[in-house]
Amino acid sequence: MKKEEKPFCPVALTVELIGNKWKLLIVRDLTHGTRRFGQLRQSIGNISQKVLTQNLRDMEKDGLVLRKVYAEVPPRVEYRLSKIGQELTSVIETLAQWGTKYRKATTKRQKRQ
Image (cartoon, rainbow, N blue to C red; front, side):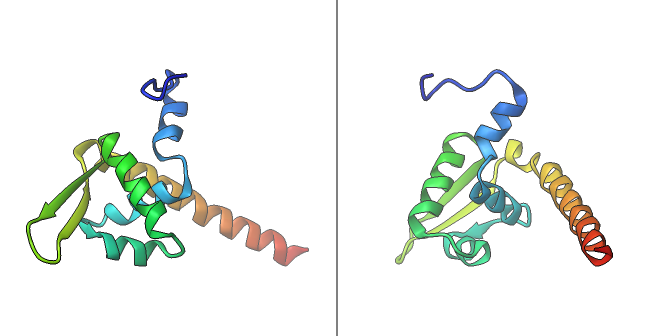
């Protein structure tokens, strides 16, 4: 499959666009508004500068993230979700709700054992 080709299946397409843990966490943080690179790196946690940069570039290329560079010294770069990227907010909220339910269910099960 060529790199430009995207899967036809909508689930496979979504997984390709945001299916790694770093991209999901980037979307999670950008749902709260515009963030600078350093803010993203700090809030995401154990992510290298290289990996964060690559994921942001991929997401910008895919139209999920917008990047704004300010002509300042030192340069200031800000990231925010595009309009289509903002639609992922409901996906992140659903994942958070499911994760909360899962944690509660598994905690109850572990206490019974």
